[in-house]
Length: 187
Image (cartoon, rainbow, N blue to C red; front, side, top):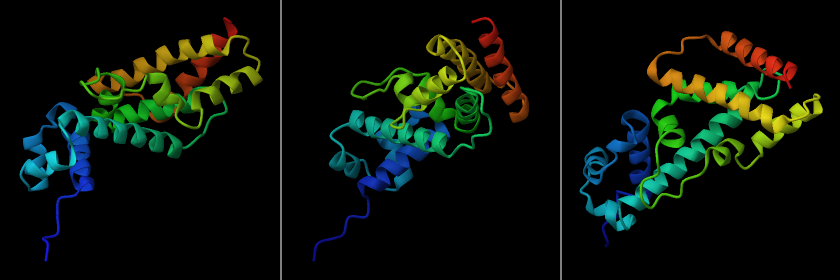
């Protein structure tokens, strides 16, 4: 009777993804994944041609994780871009390592990297929805307004990584809504 393989592709990917969330993407090496999965490196390279293929799988899992996070994040504002901003900033605060992988680091060789816009827009057209919402609410240049808001949102999210952003969710929402309204007045 053939021996059942206990180290599956799911276990390897789950392990590498968990390591990325906890320790950062730079710590995902074959030896470290094997040690954490309690196996040799042989099962890793039986499932993946090379580390680049595993890194790509981890990146794709992180992109899916962000999409699910965004979809589940509560929508509390009717102001365009405010909910998107809240989710993005919260993701940076709660998932620092994944945020860094998705939005701040260059792709390793062999990774199919998505642009920031692709990650934000997702399969449901999240950014497109927000731009249309701004248009419906009277914004003449919603794409330009999105860029202004995005610079602000991305800056706030990056500040969470360094500990320089300590505003509460309520303060953050007020800031996002006030920024949108200010940009609208100057349009």
